Image 1 (spheres, rainbow over the protein chains, first blue to last red):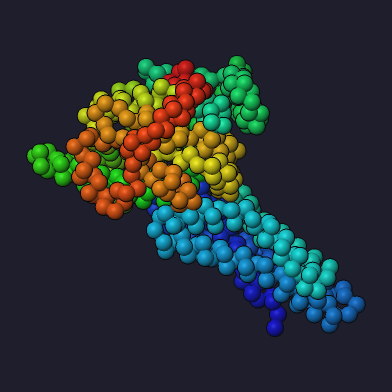
Image 2 (cartoon, helix red, strand yellow):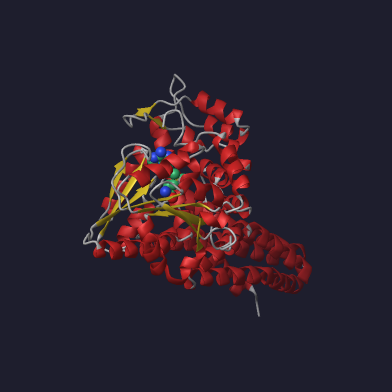
Length: 170
Length: 339
Ligand SMILES: C[S@@+](CC[C@H](N)C(=O)[O-])C[C@H]1O[C@@H](n2cnc3c(N)ncnc32)[C@H](O)[C@@H]1O
């Protein structure tokens, strides 16, 4: 089993949220669900393109490796090590989101103040923890490299989508 | 209070004539001087980047665009914190009580809610879009900033919302209302201006007011920093967001200032009765004395979250000192030289 599929899915979901964040705060209308969905799709598209970078890095690492089987194994275990902290992070985000949407406004405020707000700021830290997880799980430098490229890619989605579509919008 | 000497940049970069409401030129150097005097070098750096003409006067068009951008981001925070629902929580029952008492006296609707310092009018437009207060409540927004009022009006028309916006001063001739509300306005009023604001509404035919502002908890400044950092891009918005939390009035200050003749002052969800993680904004409410009982009935169990001035009986010395300190503090929008 390869961790590539869940990692890619996680990256794409994160990209959709990044697209939404790139748009949020730029449109003062009240009814704007369609625009929000469009922003999420734009983030998804940017993420799909950027996530080709870690895929390419993994392929290059494999092609240039002296022992491909060993490198493949290192990438796989590193990938699982990378996945674990991200899954914990994603679980907390989803829990906060569920609380926000399901519970009354006071509990929703709690979910935002304690969860969603700080978690946005903690995204780079989550990527750092994932890289550390990749190394600690035995992925070595090649997993670290691919993980760092993947992390940089997902963190770039929001600024890129913002610059492309929403910088000048009110 | 820590934030007393701190100034919000948005209060300084626009100015209007108190009488006519006409816009006045603002010199960047003057803003920089005031911010420097307050010891806020970060704010100085933000203001230094704003464009000026040959005479050093801030470009009004650029300032307007900046403030509209900042307020659009601010609206995002209001959306995320569900300010509309939070406002309806006490204001819905308040209108129920007004309808009940009005019905007994043979004075039915229509009623009017006026949002003072409405900015882009998010609350008013949200109320119009959701019809949360009922069709017999007319919705009006008032703000000192003509550019924000113009944008609020444009947004409302773009979505076909039934509400209107007026350029006006909270201290000027009042837009008649049944209930005055505001969100994030009170901390702009320092010293005697706060009491003046409540007294003017008590002297009007209004039945009540309900003004929401940042709950002055120890958590507020750090929460504001995290939230504005995570959700806002404009440096000015991030700066003013944290300063607002630092300048927020305490529960005692609000209750005492709102205890004006003709109104019964009540604080909803004060510190100690509310979880600070769940209540980032809470309202100071003023009702005509005959409205208090029906209002409490309409609130039901939630009425237990509401206290009057007697809640702080015995804390008079401390509260008096707090008011004194704030009276000596920097003038905000309401008490500023030009406003
Ligand atoms: C922090 S903003 C809050 C805006 C809006 N209520 C919200 O919650 O997004 C404060 C607003 O109060 C307005 N304001 C300040 N002093 C005022 C006054 N004396 N009369 C009317 N509006 C005033 C400002 O122009 C600004 O739009």
